[in-house]
Image (cartoon, rainbow, N blue to C red; front, side, top):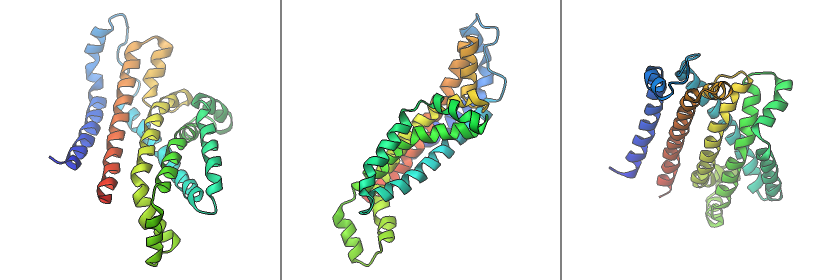
Length: 246
């Protein structure tokens, strides 16, 4: 079995395992009741875990997609001759955005945007933007100048060189940054439950406020499993670009 097939199988198995676990979690109520006999209710039943999982994954993927798009635009601008002086400023601004705690972003955004997904998406994008930007700047900056010059000598325009040469060569590094961003966003998205968006953070928050350890374990296990599954999918994409470069 080659490495490519193995990577695909890991991604499929991890994704399937998380979906199955979310589906069968309510059936494990006797196990949690035995593990936590002091709790009157040992299973979170307010909303199906599959619904929480889907909403959680949707928020993470949407925020990560927007962060990637903005980082690509900013990174391309920062690596062009006319914009190289802006690259340090872009990194500093992104670093400032990541140092702001997501809870603080939610507290500031809710009075303006109200409860719902909007403040959560803003918090996730701010928190996940820096790793992606680092990946874009690092990936584009690592493309040898000789390859760019050769592409231009063959008649490619600046945009054709970017699209056909620079971005494909930079893709593995960009995806490495995206992996870090998605992992951080998956954990941060649990806070969405505090502003009225039921995610896998709902049983965790309810467990913390109600001193219910079983709820916390259920939400944390599924959130961790989702992070692993998303990471394995991105590993497949990253290695695909690496194989294309060989």
